[in-house]
Amino acid sequence: MPYSQLLVPERRWRRPGRRWRFWRAVYRNALVIWREFRKPILVFAVAVFAGGWLYGELWVRAGYERLPYIDLPYTMLALMIFETPTDLPPQPQLVLFWYAMPLVAAYVAGRGVFDIVRLFFNPNARRNAWEEAVASTYRHHVIVLGVGHLGLRVIRALAQMGVDVVAIDWEMDNDKLAELKRLGVPVVGGDGRLPATLETAGVRHAEALAVCTSNDYMNLEVTMRARDLNPAIRIVVRMWEDRFAAQIRQFMNVEAVLSATDLAAPSFAAAALGIEITQTMRVNGIDYSMIRLSVARGSFMDGATVGQLQKVHEMDIVLHSDGGEVTVHPPHDRQLQAGDTVVIFAQHRKIMDVVARNQPRPVRGTG
Image (cartoon, rainbow, N blue to C red; front, side, top):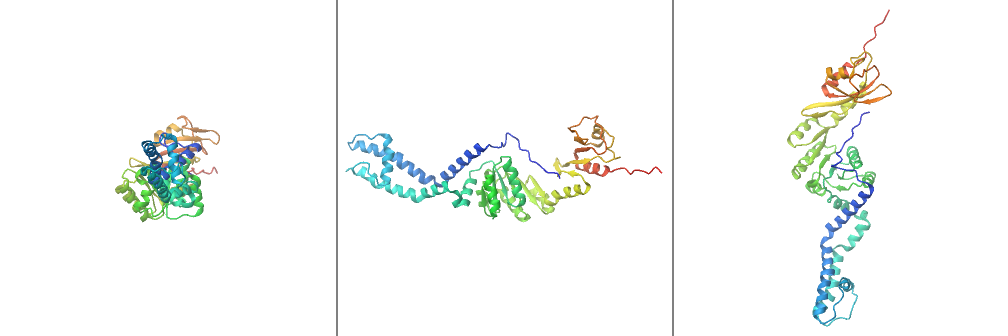
């Protein structure tokens, strides 16, 4: 049976190696921690380093011997945990540090140090919040909305090519969640029609959006929301009702509207005829298709050369096989015989004409 394969320019997306994926995950985890807890981190850093420097200057002005600069951050840390690096000085400006540092430590701990440690070493403890935070760090990625049968296959294909993917779905079973985790795809749980959900998935920074749910009305609403949030994003929409397809493509600047009926019909028809035909593609308003078939005995192709067929019938024979050798772009003087396999690319109407005319000629009796 025919299948399709997406080709991505190498300069645009490169399939990353295992080491690169690991360090990229470490970077994103660190970025999530910084975004979620930057305020207590900044307070802690200022207290330890700037506070330590100020304490050292005040210490000298009080008439004491200068403390080594390398010891000043440790002094602040010691004061935070109620350690006494020296005897309590009598100067009030220095005593202030002895009482202020424990308060700073209490603030930092209360605002998230323990959450930082828990999330860093056990992200599964708050899986949804963590993955949504990771998704917010993505740039130039693809969002797949609807992790059903179709959506999961799209995610697999994109992940295999090394494309960054963020998934959106309301709820999923454990098997799908486990596979997405294995693929390294963060999941944003929620209603994809809500701007907040799309924002969490990074729609403003995404390269493309694939809407794969089986609800046409939901797909339409999601398309409208996404186009409003990011006018430049590429959108591919799955549609069951053909009457929606032209309207969405025309009025919402959607890259492609794929109807389940349109996708399935060529495969069913081709299987009934014993041939294989790809999904039609449209270029400048003209439909093109590629087909693989076997040359029927006595048909218009039996005995004709590749050059004759391509010139007279306006088609391109891109592959030929006589049962043994397979030739890509066969020479024009190659003669086709009954039973040969050919792959033809042409306008869809020409393809249909080829299928109709590739019928075996009845053999008349000799008696």
